[in-house]
Length: 365
Image (cartoon, rainbow, N blue to C red; front, top):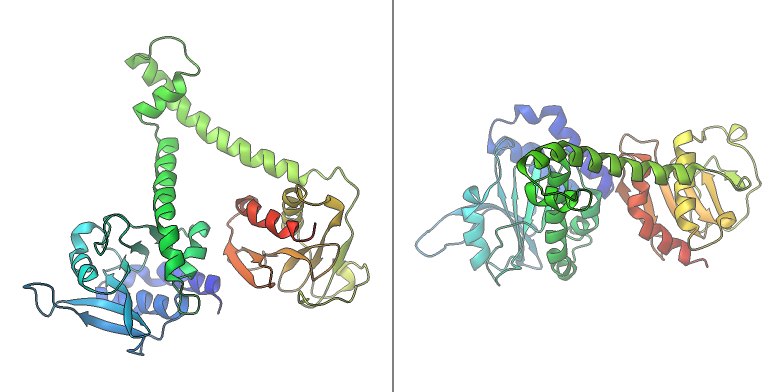
């Protein structure tokens, strides 16, 4: 099971029986330990990797325990404090994590109730855990932007230096996104004044503020929808001649070099190209066309993925779309053709990875 599939599996557990987890221990057994094992890749039964009930005496407090310590090369790197699944996470119930972080070698502290995972480090003051997390994972609403950083904490790809380097940016980007979301849902007075000042010349009285408040909220939501729809419409407008299409009934590896004859999916049993896949192809082609000619971009449909490539050559992949699964995703390939799958909820979410698509296309200029 790969990283994204493991996340989806744990998230489905929350939906299946999260409301039956009445205790902290039940939450640990059903959600938290499987997350450490399947998503992060640690053997929870190997004490050299995961130490449960980790004890570090702090000052006059003796024998206190924190739920889990993740070790690498004998050193504690991550401390995890657990709560019951329906218990809200706050600084008030993270006091042990704060104390243990200060006296241990860990650089990452995690507070979780299984559903929400808050990751802390010491950006503000060395060896003192920050009061705000730099990364927040909500398994009921996974943000695809944080997954590359979360993956750096897995046993296979552990890269603490890279995580810490990106932590400050992640912390503030997350806060800005939350602030923007809150402002779009319910504009505060400062945001309202900023917008109204550009469209209304009179004094912003209480009556004017009350008049514009619902209008600003409505306009911001319509603006976002219009931007998404405009980009999607532009990508779907096929004003150019049809692009050559090759379909394969078996998965084609990036190393394949033999040309395949042009054919249709109907002639290849087991492969059905969907409208959604074609929409995804048009979006990727529209994005990549800023780097290379549009007529160099082809697709090949396989049983397990929909590949988009350059020059009809499997050695020149741009990306792969995995749309035939419950959890849709886009597969981004690096220079070594190693694929990283990131979740998408709607086909237009492909635009979120425009920079990565352009970078892939530039390799074949």
